[in-house]
Image (cartoon, rainbow, N blue to C red; front, top):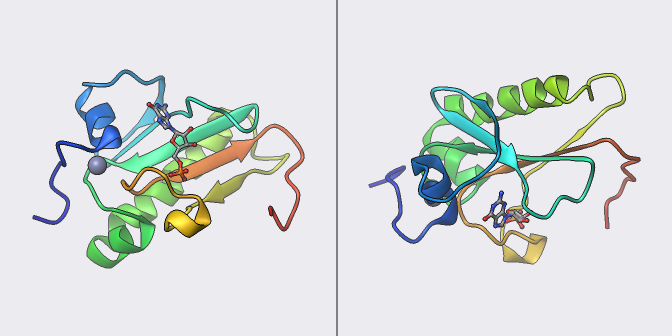
Length: 119
Ligand code: 5GP
Ligand code: ZN
């Protein structure tokens, strides 16, 4: 069923506490934790507790939770002291765009210069 935990999904295992992660923020619907391979001084992943393959699938099925992800990303950025300097929220969507974990997630990047376009 849509949103149900997937046995073979790394991020579902993090939500369940079966794979350790450094959690930095939690809500009823979202979990945020530090990326294992940080690309910036702040690199946090914000994910829905429910399993959807990517951000578009999540927004189609449960737009309120998609909004919760963006709200949580902003709160994480604030917590990391990045509100004034600026931060980037990225949803890689599809393997061609670099998505490697197929459980929807937002990258929150901050703490260094962030060029645009990202390349
Ligand atoms: P994607 O490439 O799918 O947009 O992002 C997946 C992210 O998950 C990558 O930045 C990668 O470093 C991170 N990642 C992969 N495995 C783990 C893990 O076991 N723990 C944590 N905290 N992050 C992970
Ligand atoms: Zn999952």
